[in-house]
Each structure stands twice: as structure tokens, then as C-alpha cells.
Length: 195
Length: 369
Image 1: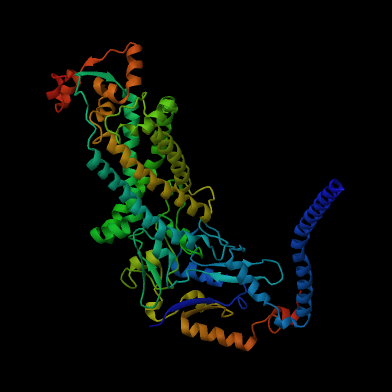
Image 2: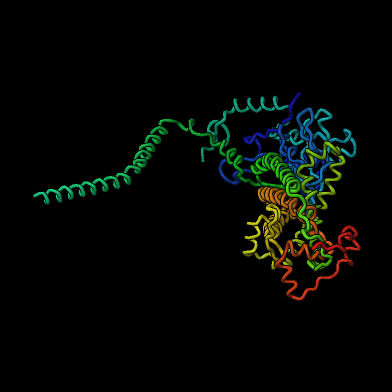
């Protein structure tokens, strides 16, 4: 069985935020909740890189490990999903996740957060596929239609790749072999020098 | 002749001794500095070696960004929201996960089990501490109505908070197999709500307890003697003196109510009000402190609850009716009893209170002394 993975090629990402917009639009994600975000490292400095980050769908997911009500499950495709009907909004998955993927609609006194929301790899949730309940709680289910996540499909520079981990890593390996791994052979430094 | 040779020998010996000392001292200071020589030459060798390699042999600058990200370096993001972070990879989460799912759950369970076992063991070995002279039939006031109200409010919230808190920690391994996921999630949802709203009220109860009872809990020499005598439980036939509160109760007050209470209240506040921009590091640390302290406190609480109810005959009624038997007071808090009598407190006949409880009525008429 394929293991679904995201990969963001930092040498190609141009921080256009199309993935973020696509995700927001496709799943009608409410204000303040961000299933995907672009992080710019060394912003404004030489060597600046941007990376689009969402749920990494870990094989050994820390969110699933710490969840007190055990609401996470991994699909046969290796996609980490959760059941919002079970979620109690304790915030533990947010503390445990290295990538800051779990989000909540609220942040208020007495630990009121609402149900956790995160990237579903466009694979919906435990509700019946393509049902209204599934769309409202988890967003569109593109994987059931044989489509890949919209963020990656939308990516203009093909920086963000999604799909079977083996295929994704093959594509990336070919890229690295063609362009070389070092700045002096490819990219900004090759064109404009090392400064 | 001989005298001069002897003094010569002595002088020579002294001189050689001085020189040896000087040599040892100077060498002991000089020799360790040899390291600098080594480092100096080492740097030169390294510099020469680096000249020999072209830039293609140096570390890849492109990996520096990933190295930084892995170490928790923050970036910039345009997205906004209460849970949006500009950290690409946060390291605290995995550490916290390992701590919570490993030592906390394992040792926490052992700690509670050991505390319970200890209580059972003490009961099995030493049994209930009886009233040695039975009931006198006269009672004296020990706790005022408002003191009992605050005590039972705090105690009740403690039990509810402990049950809901332990459910969150152990529920997945203990309750989900029994109740199923749906039922447990429904219970945990309510439990979390109760825990979060009752917590602050519990902290207020703790504050009132501290304000009410701090004056009874100043440690003194009587407490030392009380501990040496095993607190009247562990050494039979010894009656250590005690004031209004004995050494053990003072430890419960200072370590339990004061120290544990303070840690649990502060960490609980941080967890319960995530609206001041607490980082995930702060939250993970607060959760760890909250959980460790709560587990220790619950273990300690088993002891307090046991001694106050099953472990000591005639102790519980002090906190329920507010009055204790005179013989109980003489046996357990003799100094306090004498002080109360000296202040003019008059023991009252017990009929009025024991008639209501019924259970103790049989012994009322038959004081054994």
C-alpha cells in the first residue's frame, strides 16, 4: 500500500501562498484556523528559503500518541485523520506536534478550544464519504475521487509534492541529481555569486 | 667539627627540600599549559588542511537552513490565528510526549499503587488507633462551622479534580477498554469541563485554608518529639504530645496544601488560561509540573484521608460535627485540650450530637475510666 507524503522543495518554493489559499478555499476553513502555512526562514537575508508546512502525516504521530481520548487513526494510505466527535479540545496534540499542525477554532479562558482541526490530506474524515457531515467537519474528500491534495495540485513551481512517498521521493531524487545539491552549481548563488 | 657538619647537612637538606617544592610548584603550573601549545599547532594544521580543499568540499550552506529549522529556529509567516506558529519544527513536543507516555504514566501508576498499598499495610499491621479510654461522653469544639465548610468544599473539589485529572492521564489505557471510545470521550468532555471550571475554585479554597489555619501550623519543638515518637501510630503505647495540630498534620499543611497547592494552582492557571501567549514549551512544562505534583499529592492524600477516617477512632467527627470527644482530645491533642480548658472552654455532654449520629450512642453512657 502506498504511504501518502508531502514534500516541499525549498529550492522551488517562491512563497506565493497559493497552497494556503487553495486549502482555505477547498475546505472552507474558518478564520484563525490554518491547516497549511508557509514559513520563511532567514526572511530578507541571503539564503532565504520558504517552506510550506502542514500535517506531515507521521508514521509514528505524536498527536495520536498523546491524545487522551484516542481519536486519531491512520488510514491504509498512511494518512493521519481524527474523529471530531471524540475530540475534547484538550490541546495535547498541539503541544506534541513538532510542526504546529493541529489548530482549534477558539482560544479562550478555561481551556475552551473547540474541536481540533488539521490537514486531512484532502481525505475527509470518519463520516460517510462525500456526506454533508464530512464536508462540514473535515472538508472535501479528494482522495476518494482519486485526486491528490489541492495544495500540491495548485503549486505553480511544483515545489509542494503530495502522493505516494516512493513516487514523491523519486521525483525529488531526480531533481537533486540533475541540479546538484550545492548552491554554487544551481540556484541563486550560481547565478549571482555567493553573497 | 661534628656540629658544623650536622648543621651543613641540615641546611643542604632544607635547601634541596625548598628547591624540590619550587620545582613541583612551577611544573604543576607549567605542565597543564602544554595544552595551549597543542591547540595552537592544531589550529595551524587545521588551517593548512582547509586550504587544501576547494569550496566544494566545505559543508553545504543549503543544509544550514534545515539545521536551523531542526534546532527550532523560527521564521516568518503571513498566516494569523491563535494557534499559528512561526516555528517550522518544535522540539519540545516529542520530549513532552516521551515524558508523558513513558515515565509519567508508568511511575505515576506505581506511585499511586504504592501509596494505596502503604495505607492498606499500615491498617493491616497497626490497625485502627482506638480511643484508649473509650468515649468520655463529653465533647469539645474543634472546628468551627466555616472552617468545616471550607475544608469539605476543598476536599470535595480535590476528589473531583483528582478523578477527572487521573481519567485524562490513565483513561485511554484503563477506561477506554472498559467503556469504549464514544462513552469515554463523552465522559472526558464533561470531565475536562468540570476540571477546568472547578480548578480555580479549588485554588480559592486552598487560599482560604492557608489563611484560616496557618497560625495553627507553625512548627515547634513539640512536633519534633511527636515525630520521634512515631506519631502515635508506629510505636505502640507512646502518646506524643501535640497542640491543635500535630507534626503530621503540619507536614500535610505545608507540603500538601501549601507547596503542592501552589505548584498545582500556578501550573493549572497557565494550562487553563492559554490566552496570555504561552508558548508550547511553557504549556508542556506546566503540564509536567501539574501532573507530577498532582500524582504526589493524591498519593499523600490517601494517607490524610485514611488517618482522618478509618485510621483513627473519633477523628472524623471533629470535621463533620465540629466537636470531638474529650478523651480523643486528651489522647491525640493533649496540649491543645489543656489550652482550651485553661481558656475556659467547657466540654458539653455528647448526647446532643451523638444521638443524631446513632452509631456512637452505645458507648456514651459507659465512660471506661
